[in-house]
Amino acid sequence: MELTSSHAIQGIMVLATVAGGYAVVKSNLARVMGDLEDFMKRYEKQKSIFDARLDDAESQRAVFTSQIDVLKEINSVSALEHRNREIATLQAEVKVLRNQVEHLNNIHNGNHPDTTK
Image (cartoon, rainbow, N blue to C red; front, side, top):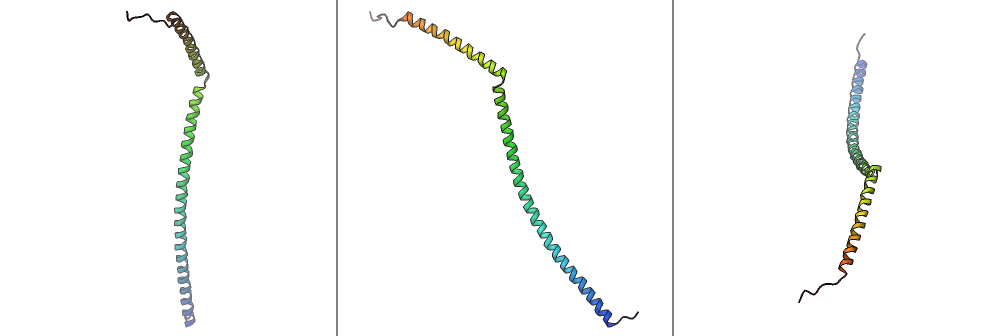
């Protein structure tokens, strides 16, 4: 097989085509890498915003759970029974004290002896 100038021209054209393809691929790859980097930045920003919102929601949920537990304890049957007994005791003591004050008022009846003599 003999190499002619047409073969040389075809070889040069093949090399030029491969070099052009390489340049196109390199250019497109650089653009794709840049796009991927931009996407990753946007993704990380959105992820951090979402994580912050999720943390806030979890924190609020923990607060609500704690508040519900406190209210549940306050309104439990044993706590209500204890509170009702305390109130009944206080009411009985107030009644006794009122009776004592009324008795003392009746004894005293508002008259003071003259101490200037």
